[in-house]
Length: 80
Image (cartoon, rainbow, N blue to C red; front, side, top):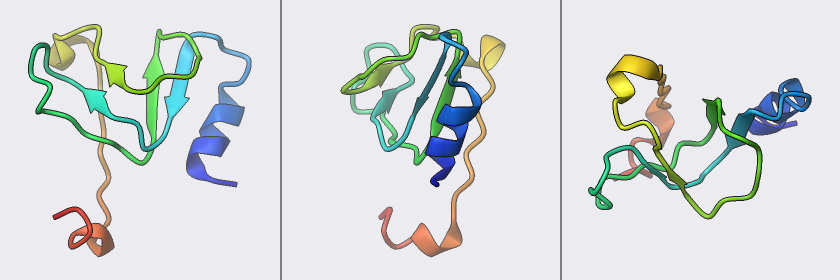
């Protein structure tokens, strides 16, 4: 089982928790060049469903949303 699969299973009964992995996320309104594709992303308050990308709907991320990124040192060369 993957981390994303485990999180999806954990929140399977909550329709307002969106779990995705390796999906473009655009955190800044109007700045499409600013994007990330985290290995796993859990978004509370958003419905489940297939998406081609995730556009941040609340652009005041520092006030309402907590985000934690864990980066593996082994991926440093891959990400450059």
